[in-house]
Image (cartoon, rainbow, N blue to C red; front, side):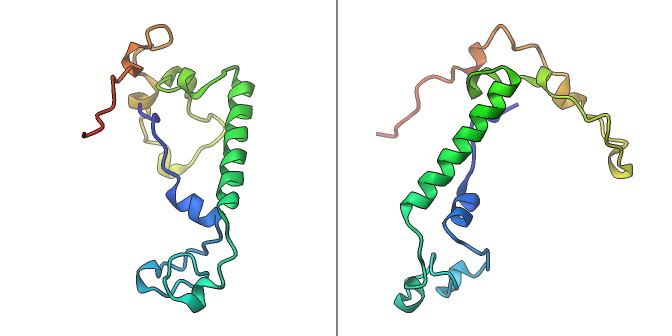
Length: 125
């Protein structure tokens, strides 16, 4: 099922103050994050501490959600399709015909977690 990796690029930029003007490539970022223009860079109040604080909150929320579900780590829930189920209280016409069995009816991986051991990472050295 995946979920062994996470992408936080955009949300980290937003935590730093990005307003998603979508003009990063023009050297005219209105917030001063993605520019080399000194006049615009002076507008940027961000610090690395903002990102660190944001990710500390993300980690804390993940720990709280896992604890609520009775787990101690993400490693314990990765690939656990048995923990997924469609919401019975939501009925949308556009999703009535969706068959989610390919996500929710996967092999039982509760006891045998060997598939998570991917081996050493190639350092390309």
